[in-house]
Image (cartoon, rainbow, N blue to C red; front, side, top):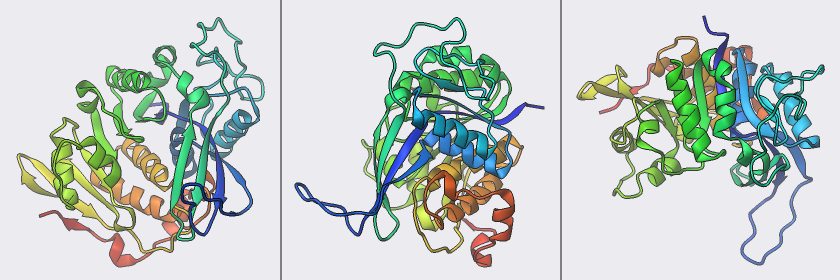
Length: 352
């Protein structure tokens, strides 16, 4: 039995959010809502989402020794995630926790700081329009100081995890180190290449699943001519080497592709569409992270991929009905109570 259902390796940001009727054009100024500050970052979001659902979760991430970093640590604690991997400042290493549960910078024999030394906690500048759609610009800050050495120092966390989930808001060499550490210790790897970047072939081959939205799928497959058929995207993505693929489709749910999934399409690989409950979107910020966190938790508990995606779709759909990222995430009881459209949560459609 693993100590953790899910180890998330990734970013932790302060989300600075402004609502507006429409986004400004070049040289234009528009008025927006009052500024709201929320805990965020893809890694922190996924860990919080899983922990709120009841997962035994911890986050390997780096924050600055500042007010935003303390806010993020408290948000993880409030969600129920362990703080064993949350690093503060440039010299903290896994395994040093202060008496209040928040890490103490430099309290152990720490490695040399990354070039550039200390950095503030990462920040995401987010605008949300009247339809609930968001646009995001990220200043990585301390996230850029999460290194392969940090992964190596967190060996015990990888040994203790059933599933490792990684995104690309941290350095690519750290992503690769985390993927290889997951494989070394027998953990299943869930990887969301966001923001999209070219990944080493051996890292792609470890993904089970590779989780992408349409934008990420098209960028990963930039050299290919693709239509509007998600099944075509999934087939092409499987050709890059991952063991399985999940394509998120917004309010249309998700597509799952891989061995043993749905109806067999070719060479032992099947595909199935998982529809989404019908909901009124308020704010899509962090909904994809809620989906991925829920997916990682269910896989860590031994659920098969298709059923894990069905649950994750429900979690992601719930998240868009509330404002904010982590504040919008449901508990397991919320998900069970919010059944949505009964027909949308049925068996789904096998891909043709």
